[in-house]
View 1 (cartoon, helix red, strand yellow):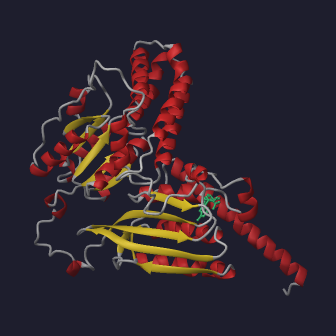
View 2 (cartoon, protein in one colour; view 1 turned 45 degrees about the horizontal axis):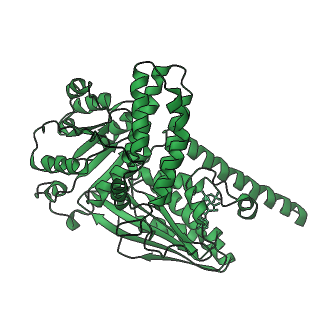
View 3 (cartoon, rainbow, N blue to C red; view 1 turned 120 degrees about the horizontal axis):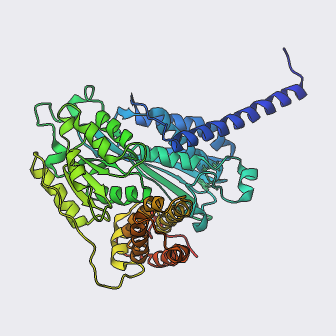
Length: 486
Ligand code: ADP
């Protein structure tokens, strides 16, 4: 029926309220699915440039309403068709571009896309969303990708939103084998950038790729590997992935054994790096399941990642079909040797020798040269964010350690803490965590050491932050943008 003016206003208000609620509900559903590891990506063929244009079209209205110009530049051509999840891909772009418009009152929002790598079966595409808006302070950037994080208390009132968009986008990007990073100069604007690894459909593009008679392993021939990393700790994920991607390998990261087995089914890999202790399904069981697959899948080299210093489990691991071992923290020289030996041989390689930490010297609070290596390796996001991730994980592990109802149960989280600390060159924290782990195995908790943990984490964090270097390979340049002033 015809509505009066007032009725129309009411209905329009109802409608926009319903839409806001719907958006919040969808975000909450997404984040809980992601946290429950129940979010699965679809595999469909789609035109990536078309999706970007659709996002631009959808947002054109809100940009025009604010006199913000909105553009799309395809820096290098994108493949005509890729294989992946177009809905989730659109969601990431929509979130970033939507935020860019929301937090810009005048100027430009630019979307950029380029192909940064491509082989016969996969491509890596990079996307940027740049705005000339209010920008993001350094402090805010530390928690930017955390669920429910918003600029300040006034953000919800002024701009709406739930603070979930970036957290969801980050995880979606990671599920697509990439990383999401932000850089910003407060008052001048922000730049969000991410890359995703997508499949390429084989038949329609047969001409552009090498003919099928060419041996189908260009990745191996060039010394570049397609690597599956199964690792549940996000710091270890970040470090290992950064290291491998810097060397030109393409990496898919999964967080448990179930996902690892599924990934081996879905994507072709040259190598699997398998953490042994993972939730849901551990590395041993996942290895056994992969070995049970028909060849060539069942014959994939699988290297165990383990923080077991004693390695009493080693015979059992070998029995489950593992090809070799690397101990955490990873010795990169040994890691490279392992990759080289896989490139040469197709038969199982000998178990990689173990490195034991150097003994007999005073353990520094943080090992500066190890931290420098780490900074050079990690290319995603500012150093402070990486350190914040470390601190959060350490604090979480310590909280878990304090919550145990039996001394022996302390071993698990203490062991996690040790691995994390060792990766960050946080020698003293690693040492304390090791002592606690060993004690826990014997059914003992050293309460004085436990009490010293908070202060030690605080000191370690400060020492790590103080090591922010602006030299070559560091993160001070934040994606090539000038560092924020002041
Ligand atoms: P929401 O959009 O619901 O606020 P997001 O997770 O998308 O949640 O973003 C979290 C916060 O990050 C925003 O509230 C805002 O403070 C900040 N932010 C995100 N994108 C930008 C941007 N392009 N410019 C300035 N601030 C931004």
